[in-house]
Image (cartoon, rainbow, N blue to C red):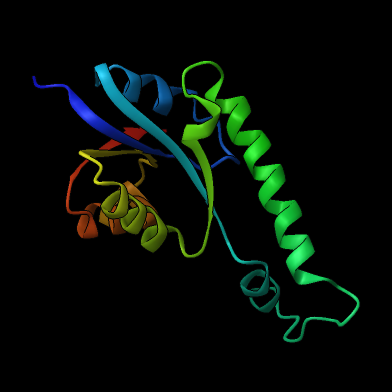
Length: 146
C-alpha cells in the first residue's frame, strides 16, 4: 500500500483520540506531513443552541471564543504528544463537517483520518460528522472505530 504524503487527522478533543492518532501515524511515510485539527462550535452558535437567544452585553464573545480556542489548543497538544509538531496542530471554529472538508481541500490532504461511533444505521454507524465528511471529502477518508 502506498503511503500517504499529507494526512489530516480530525479529532474530538472531548474523547480519547490516541487510537485515531496512532492509526493515522501508521499510514505516513518518512517524508509525509501530518496536520492535527479539532473543530469547536462558534460561541454565538452555542449560546443560541442553548436557548439563550440573545448574547448578554456583559459577555465579551470574542474574548470568550479566544479563551475557548486556547483551551482546545492545549488539549489538542496533549493528545498530539510528540507525534505531531505544535505548528501542525490547529483549532478551527465553525461547523464540524464543513470545517474538516474545507481544511482538507485547502491543505490538499491525501487522506482524512477521524473517529466514528459503531451503532446502527449509516449515520449512527459512522456518526453524523463522520458520515458528512465521508460523503463530502474529495480525498480518501479513514474511519477509526471509537
